Image (cartoon, rainbow, N blue to C red; front, top):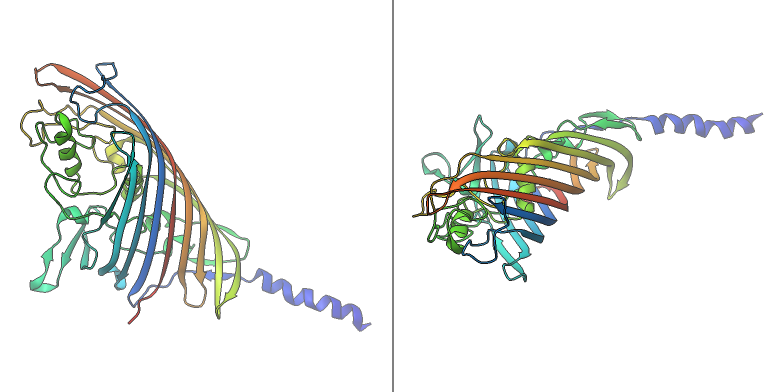
Length: 387
């Protein structure tokens, strides 16, 4: 009579354990945290540009204005310690490497170091969401160049990668804070400003100081001036566009998670969470955080000599979509996310049309269409900072 009971008992005891919920709510961190973040972007651009309805001929001194596109990649490695509440951040590593086709068709690779590397900065977020950085405290505080603050997240928190409540293994849930946490992983790597190059505002050569793409003036000087107008931002390919789009926080987001299970690792109970997300937005580029002129030409005439009058406002529209999948690991006892591994596909279509005057005072209608497809990876980990 006892043998059937012995066979049933394990089932009775195991069933409640399988259904036991796990608390997935990230606790506030009262001590400095160490973050390691790596990002990789690989994209292919198909670009078409027209002047008065016709493709511009080869040469002609237009300095890089034309069709084409090609493959580009951008990889970043970032390490820093952040104080409680994001009050301060100390960067120990801030580097990026970009590979993109040059004007001669050959692949060009450029590596830079962010100007904030080795610095401890104090972070302040304004009401409009912009961030200002200072070095030093109190009377010794000095503002950091605004170009180095652009795109820097106010705080870095992994809390949005978990639901903030108890869930059972196999249970699915919404992740309303996913976008905020993802934005915190995308730090721009911005070098020091230098005259006339990528790292600074630059001078527009013989023409006006154009927007990104450099139609503000003729020849290469105008293009360089346009690049500098972004305040020294490195990475002019679609990797930079992805950072801008996600960093602005204006995309529609549908993010969900699912608790896969909990296992013991090095004496810790680690929960594994599967995440999926779709981000999308369609409308005016400026409304989604993109700089004017990404379509291949800028407003022109912003400070250089010559180059005609500034372009009219025109149209600048974007249609962007992201599909993301990945895994998040969570320390149940310490109530903190310890690892994030995400991979996604990206598709960005952008159309720009403006009318501006050439050197002879004649109107030119310029149209640009850029279709970008690619993929990106984000890996991040965090833990208590070493004393």
